[in-house]
Image 1 (cartoon, rainbow, N blue to C red):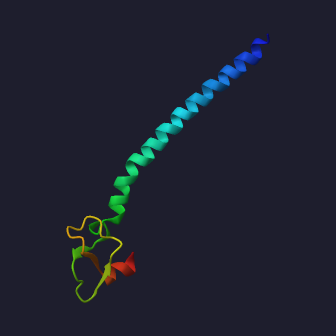
Image 2 (cartoon, one colour; image 1 turned 90 degrees about the horizontal axis):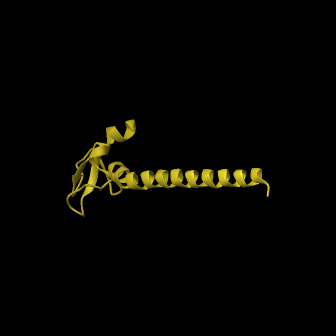
Amino acid sequence: MDRRGVEMSLNLIILIVIGLVVLAIVIYLLTSNSGKWNRDVGACQAKGGTCKSQCDPGESGSTFFTQGCPNQDDICCMPESALLKG
C-alpha cells in the first residue's frame, strides 16, 4: 500500500475538519451579533430622532426607524435639517 497517498488523504481530512470548525465559529459570531446590530440600526434615537405620535412642523416622520419606541403607534420624528446632512 502506498503510504504517501494515505498521508495526503489524512492531511486533507484534517484540513477540512479545521476549516469546518472555523466556518462554524464565523457563522455563529455573525448570527449572534446580527440581532443587536439590527436593533441599533433601526433605533430612532440612533438616527437623532424622537418617538412621537405626531411630528412637529419642521420634522419628518419615519415608520421605518421605530425600533425602541415605547408605543407601537409612534413614529420617529427627525428634524429635516438632520435628514439633509445624513
